[in-house]
Image 1 (cartoon, rainbow, N blue to C red):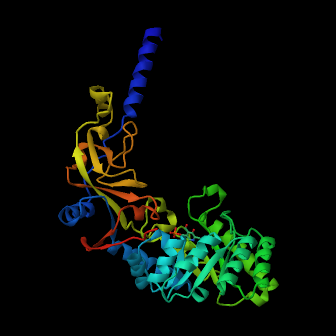
Image 2 (image 1 turned 180 degrees about the vertical axis):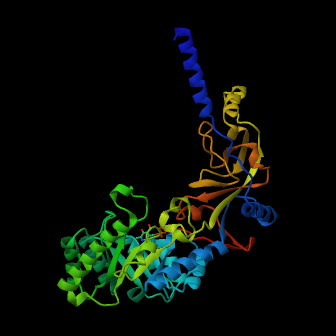
Image 3 (image 1 turned 90 degrees about the vertical axis):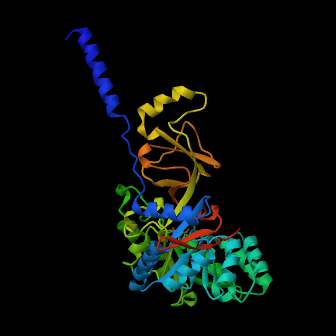
Length: 423
Ligand SMILES: Cc1ncc(COP(=O)(O)O)c(C=O)c1O
């Protein structure tokens, strides 16, 4: 081949490859669900960023969790941090018929004790003893921690500190022990570490009461690479470790063992698999009820997204125009049809992914704004100023706290606003 032909051929192939890499138009208008929700929010919403909870969708998820765990003979424990609104927790508790909560934060724990004075509360993390002392100082109402609260303890030192607190308060503290079933986020790793904790409990019978184990297994079902074991294999390993801790305690600390101990496990990614094991009796689940995007997992295929961020479009400015590049920005909208429309929305930079209309995208070159976030799209999305952009949170904890009162939807209509916890 002549040199000139070779060069032309190479250039042609390069151009074809480049054209092949050109982004396709990914834009499409709202689905019927979001078209109706947009109309409802334009009629009755506050026209500011809101967190919408769809009760019809939530019901379907609650019923799934409740039926799965009831069928397996296990108690359902609501994860408060993932549903941080007293009315939301109350709604879930009534529908699922449970009075068990898992708490993670001292101010929320005080709210729990006030709003749910008849509940059993298990801590999901070990709080510094001074935070625990603050709980007792600010406790209001008939909630009786000596009967209804299980503090989580992870080391002998923590147990000694709680024993000292109990002595000072003239009360007894129920201690649930954190065990490491494979997550490696602390707690007893082996029987030696567990023995050291149980020794402290046995030495303080007036101050400490052993109330069970908490073995969290977020790694089960949460996208650990398949080569390291499938979800079921990881659960089997976790429960084998759990069984080892139970057997050891029954054998070596028989006087502390009771049949009504709380043997807590699970979490949203693994709760469905726990229906198939017979050791745990208490399963925590929260996020699965709202199914944010990081919970689009095989184990939660039957769940439906029930929480959305909605925010109004404030401005529609046409093809992307980058500061400093001005007119030269046309190259971007020529290359990518998904940059041929530009919107600025009310607020932004949330831990969330665009949901509807289809094909909305962030612009890295323009950058984020928590005040007026840029959103690029193809004209095919059909958005106008005053329409809503819908996102799905990536996680529910903390994101739910960023929007003031939750907007509550039933049958496609806004029926209420529910306050969230304040720290
Ligand atoms: C101890 C413990 N249990 C259970 C959960 C599960 O919560 P969720 O179901 O909301 O993922 C968590 C979440 O962080 C946790 O830390």
